[in-house]
Amino acid sequence: MHDDHHHHDHDHHQDNRYSDMQARVKALETVLTEKGLIDPAAIDAIVETYETKVGPRNGAHVVAKAWIEPDFADWLKRDATAAIASLGYSGRQGEHMRAVFNTPETHNLVVCTLCSCYPWAVLGLPPVWYKAPAYRSRAVIDPRGVLAEFGLTLPAEKKIRVWDSTAELRYIVIPERPEGTDGLDEKALSALVSRDAMIGTTVAGMPE
Amino acid sequence: MNGPHDLGGQMGFGPVAPEPNEPYFHAEWEKQALGIVLSCGAFGAWTIDESRHARENIPPAAYLAASYYEIWIRALETLLERHGFATQDEIDTSHKRTEPAVPKRVLTADMVAGVLAKGGPCDRPVGSSPRFAVGEKVRTRNFNPTGHTRLPRYARAKQGVIEAVQGSFVFPDDNAHDLGENPQWVYTVVFDGAEIWGDGADPSLTVSIDAWESYLEPA
Image (cartoon, rainbow over all chains, first blue to last red; front, side):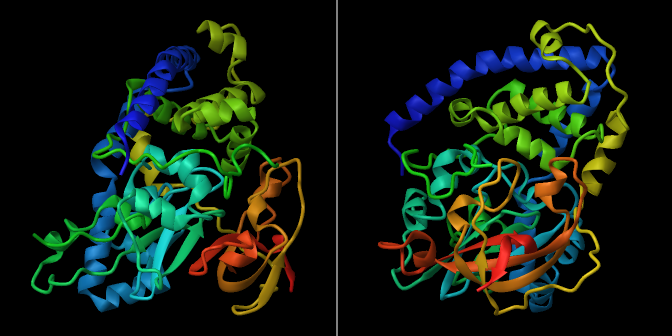
């Protein structure tokens, strides 16, 4: 994976930025509140939503249901927005969903090279690396190198399809169902599905 | 515009740095940044396309050095000033000196769940049939506009195949500049890795973009 040296540099750099940004954002908040343009309670409600209600568990539920119910998987392929909304997941950055299915022949990987487009409704807020230049620059030209940094090495004959989210469609990868999971229920299956598996930087976990 | 945001295929940024058990926020100010940006978006004074373009216009050295929440905040300051809500001087000094423009709405806590649930759908009906059909070969246009576009540099003047007709959507290249929504058909266009990257491309790679109709020509 990654050496500690890199992490150290990264964190140090971020720490320096944080003090500047803390002051800058505080100033913005003060002025906008004084002008009656923002409600601090609304900010708290937004943060609480993305800390506790909207996150990758939503997407894992979608994946597990697709593994168990072929009809739901078909609906996801035809109209992912409606199929996902039927589970209660919709709204901001999930308005126009597409589900892309990994197969024995093809592995899917999602990126937004131009900004940070990400399916919030099913995965929540994107991780820092997803929005950072290293991933955005390399996912389209060197996906195998990127996957290796996540610990995933695919067979040479496996095709890789990279989806660059350049419009308003938001993509969720449906990973392949792991072997040896026949008896598991939806809850147990969803525990095998990580955020990264639904971006495509890894695959579903194996049952213990 | 050929800005610092258009990162596909650029080199030199080093390895991706996934953080195990990454928290949703790395500092308190990031929480405030998220809430402020979404709250100001609710003013209804600018579109997602205008805000993306404001982010792209951050000078390259600053853009590439910034975390994404910092990019959001820098662009927000531009938008607040442009639309009369707060001047840079007011933000720098943390003190109100002018009366702000009147927003269409101020987001209050009771509105948050509804606003987030509604989102901002940008599919729109268009009065024509799609020009291209699934399976058709197309070539992306070669252009270098100084304004907003969602056709990345790496995918210009490249031949690909229409894989899906995805519906009709607001055209960001116009909408970002207050020129109207002017919806167009959007297609998923898939390219062979070698068409984009040439010699040495991963032979197992295909890359797709979602392209508005005016980005495409018959091949």
